[in-house]
Length: 396
Image (cartoon, rainbow, N blue to C red; front, side):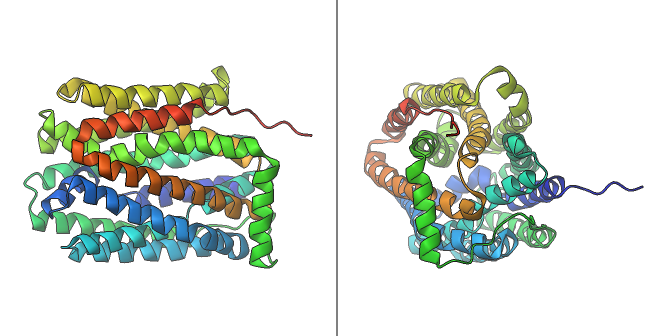
């Protein structure tokens, strides 16, 4: 007799492939170099990030409401179409404002996945009584992005090694093709039967999410601990590691090799979450990875001329990102009710977007002084986040 596949297992498999095709970006290893070849300065690149965060700030609550009321599948479909639209804008972008428009649409598309993906997986696992496996499930799904990166960054960096316009255009088109495959995969998602599509007034839904955060202040502290490390060690560093490596002497076509090795490291780290949490508590791992992020940023700032230190810091920060997100996802989702899960996560993301805007705005002024001062500022921000106290939820 054929064994019936549990909904948790099914959705994890489907989300794995959605993550695989949805995270494909042949342009990633040369994206910052693409920006600079189009005339963008370091300050303008940070403004591009600010438009992305501004879109997230505006879109998080409305898209969280859509996910809670109409389900993750519909939310993902809208988000994927917007992502394709953003790439169409990037294809014709030749002024700073078109890059800002691309970033805004792309950031808005992300909000249709933000919170909804975690809510879908947690509720699917909960239906099978396996919600305590959330961090392992998210680690597995996250690993798909590292696999796709291994394959795409090598091609992207080698193909665009001359930084010619035609090379960039082909890389963008290949990315759009993968997003159409993502659309087909989204159609295979199954909605959990225990998932409660919230039918109350949207303002009541938002209020319920705010009450959840208020009743669990450790959720907010945990979120701040996670995001104040991710913003400098993830979002900001991701946009400046390419010029850092090139300035330290790495040939452009070798950037893809570095990204590919980092993806392998991230893949095994994501797949090892269960073993890590068997030896260390999740909270301890949050602190360990936070301090490692501070160290990586600081080393990059102080030894920017040393290629080996830059590469080592790059690998370290990629490992940190791979480990922290699944663990935070488990700790935070344990505190949030199913019927307003996506909305509550979206409310937290609004705070994240506000912090993004503050950090990016501040760093856009610092950028005038060079990469060293950007990275030093990032290390201080990451240290503040790491030092925020977090503790595990205790049932009353």
